[in-house]
Image (cartoon, rainbow, N blue to C red):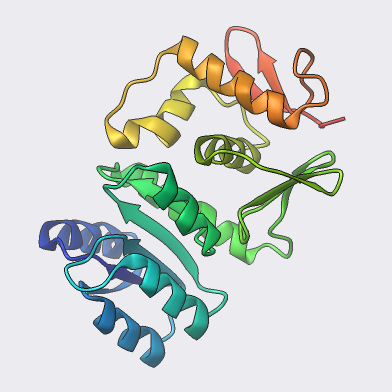
Length: 225
């Protein structure tokens, strides 16, 4: 698997290069938009890890170039920017994930493997009953009608649907959604976020069938019926 890193911080590049090569990936790195565009036009990559802010150019432009050169290539944004606009903009451009710095090595590798599993599947759409999430377009529909979610709600739902066959604990959610930014979120806050998501996707939020509470343990994905 060939990975392109577009990042202008030498320390981050070295860390990512060592981490990914130790996992058996073939890694190429550059720190400028024009260099990345040339590489994309000259070589084939399976996945690109893009920083949004570069010394020359930006990751959004590199993502657009990647989409033109290799429409099926996976893109994950790595950035210190945690504002909702940047997250949504990256997902709207076709990125499969968005990870805020600082991130943990274990989580990054897990996200890469999850992205590859989605690409290798014959159907990229994740579903629970009549609820469907299409990672390639970052859209969510229920009974065919689109549901507009905030960036945080989208990431929560994506994580749940990617882990349909396992119990999802609050600690899992902290690791995947918040701890990458060094932010601690209380159980009560997580409950509030889950309640807001349920209000968007459930037929009856008081009796959820998509995100089901496992008392004292966490959550699981239900049938959505």
